[in-house]
Image 1: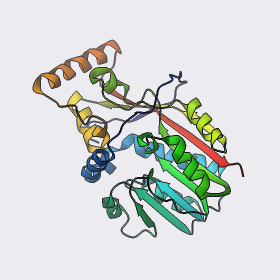
Image 2 (image 1 turned 90 degrees about the vertical axis):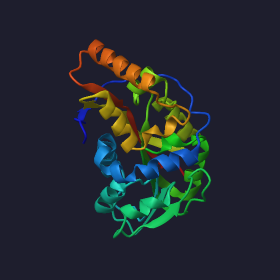
Image 3 (image 1 turned 60 degrees about the horizontal axis):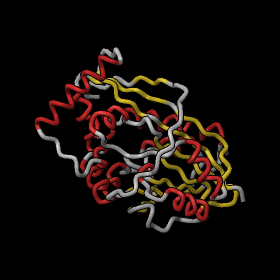
Length: 273
């Protein structure tokens, strides 16, 4: 995938308390991901691995019968297809910010619920709510968890991946752009406050490697991740400085190629009542 050589590396991770980003422009997020939809599937190497691992965890912890599922941030449908294969699903509702995601589901039996998940009314009587690599965009995650709790059946499941503090740490270190992520412990606390039991929680680091810094930028653009840097403009000088600083970082870390770190967090939770 354009110079990416994905390597899955699981490490024990320290925690860092950070605050969720105070202000996100959802219209910018919508535009960036819609623009990236044609390149996303090819480039989203880490996101694919994350979906596969989340689906494996759901197989391990969830019942085989999940008749009614609602997915927040379905994107290109990777998780959707995995869950439709693995579980007995009668009714699958998918959500995303932009209507263009419908292009990824030409033959699949899904219902669409397009729009901002923080503002939409959720379907009800759900067996499970699922999400992969999307909840980090929410401005009030506690309120989203409360909506999910209300939409689930008693003892219904909430299964999701999001990202931790070391996600895309190279970019944040080099240009100071990126989201502020909640640590796993804080996510667990928010869930418990909203009436969930956390059945399983884990985190890991996935490191991709690229031949050149410009390949890293192409990868980020192709996956829509640049939605965080609305006010950041690349000048020729900034670009040259980024290349030089990235080379220095690579040298310090004794890497052969340019690393880019993803820090997924996985949580399997169940509504208590």
